[in-house]
Amino acid sequence: MKNYNIAVVPGDGIGNEIVPEGIKVLEAVAKKHNFSITTESFDWGAGYYLKNKKFLPEDGLEVLKKFDAIYFGSVGLPEVDDTLPAKDYTFKVRTNFEQYVNFRPVRTYPGVQRPLRTEKHIDFVIIRENTEGEFVQVGSQYLPDSENGMGVDTSIFTRKGIERIAHYAFKLALKRRKKVTHITKSNTLINSLTYWDRIIKEVAQQYPEVAHDQMYIDNSTANFVLKPEIFDVVLTTNLFGDILSDLGGAVMGSLGLGGSGNINPEKDFPSMFEPIHGSAPDIAGQNIANPYGQIWSGALMLEHLGEVKAADAIMQAIDRSTKRGVLTVDLGGKSSTVDVANAVIQNL
Ligand code: NAI
Ligand code: MG
Image (cartoon, rainbow, N blue to C red; front, side):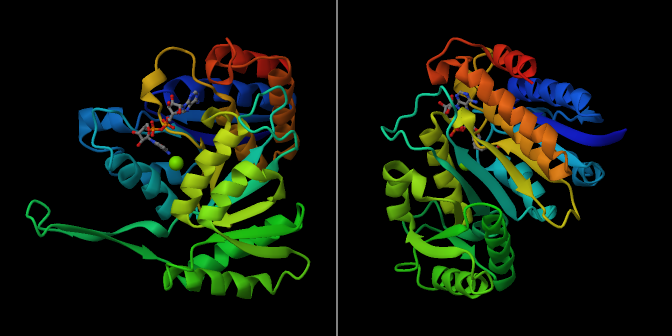
């Protein structure tokens, strides 16, 4: 029987509530599909930082590297400097493990009320460049306390970085409705994003079967709300993708519904799967957090590992659960975090 070794990093806040429920679902689906998962849990994150002055141990990445995949919640606590979680954990894993694809699907959940009036089915994937762009954290502050103080952050867009994410997006489109919309703002960011456009257009020529258009970020936020059904694969930069994926979550009905994968397509390193949202300290510890996005992230992990049938089974069980009204407070329901996971398991 095939076994997968999964590193589990619940992180902080609601991560500690939704990740264990997600694992329960993974274990249940594995049993039905003839494979097993072995998990090892690590208490890294902002809580760990309060005791150890770091988000993960010195050899943390070496430890993670040995696993087949990482199942992650989210990191961040109100009492910890909020510039640290991304820099010291999330970006560290994403960049060191060349998880240059941030795969963030958006779709309609049956039985979930959406904020949009449209009844149209929504099903698209945000492909967010995950290792460079606006989030490289190259920059400095100069005399920040003086009246001449200044702060600079530099965006970095490389040919290699753009080519590989563009190829991923176009290949994905070939398996879907064959359309890539790339998000830009090259009318004003005339160096970095004209380069982004140029390389994507070069790559697009290698995929004549895929329709390709470009859209400015400001217009695309409007279209996410007004015409979300026009999108298939949305190819975007790191910052724009961060913003658009929360909007994607909102379009689905709640941030808690979004699952994601930080993927190293070459499989040289483990990939990391996490919900799109953060640690939600405002609702932590109450067993009310919505775990659907965390559970969906588990399905994306199984798909990446090659267990496609098991991944599909999770998605169908999610749909049966929402359709039957198993909804958390953020969706207008009364179900707890644990209720949702139990319903999904029952519906497998
Ligand atoms: P957030 O996503 O944690 O929460 C935003 C709002 O959505 C809150 O009102 C929260 O209650 C709600 N929400 C989020 N997930 C939910 C769920 N599963 N069920 C029901 N409601 C949910 O974003 P926020 O408040 O901006 O950040 C909180 C902390 O999380 C910060 O420390 C931030 O740095 C961190 N963060 C970490 C991320 C990661 O580890 N990848 C990503 C985003 C934020
Ligand atoms: Mg975000």
